[in-house]
Amino acid sequence: MTQDSPGKPDSAGRHTDPALAELEAQIDKTREQLGETVEELAAKADVPARAKAKAHQTADRVRATAQRAEAKVTAAGHEAAGRITGAKEKAADKVTAAKEKAAGSAGAARDEATGKVAGASEAVRSSGSHLAGSAHDAGAKAGAKLSRVSDDQWRGTYLPLAAGFTAAAAAGAILWLKHRSDH
Image 1 (cartoon, helix red, strand yellow):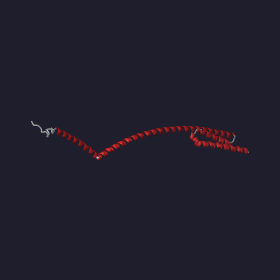
Image 2 (tube, one colour):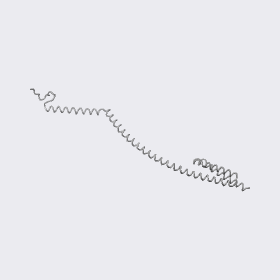
Image 3 (spheres, one colour):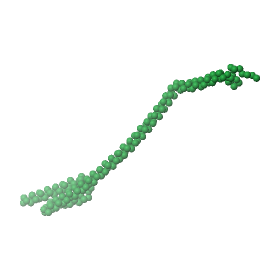
Image 4 (cartoon, one colour):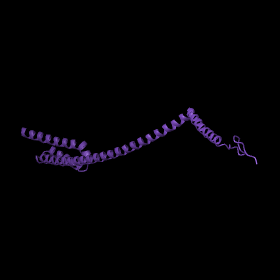
């Protein structure tokens, strides 16, 4: 029987002395801690890797901020589009109402002018002048034209024409009456 001596390792490489075994365990633990510390120091000393990690973090933060800003801008754009659509519809309603009012006014003015032309033509015609007959014919033609024109044509072209015929008929009647009273 051989007995191991108290300071020497056994066949597995372990010391039989408890104090030495504890010391060996502490050395192993210290080596492990030292390895971890060396890895931490190496990571801290690796400036390019740290800079790259920081850049990735910053880029991720910027992307998140941009996405939030984009969402806010999109929401504001939709809100503005809704307001514009509402204002556009309101303006279209006002334009339609104004057109209808103008059409009614133009129609009334056309009817009034037609009546005046017919009245002036009749007054001149009843006075017996051959000039009155021409004025009556011109008034009748103007009245016939007036019934076939649009409101825009009436305001732009035919209203001044009808006023001119009326003035010509009245002037002709006045001249005829003056000429007749002189003789």
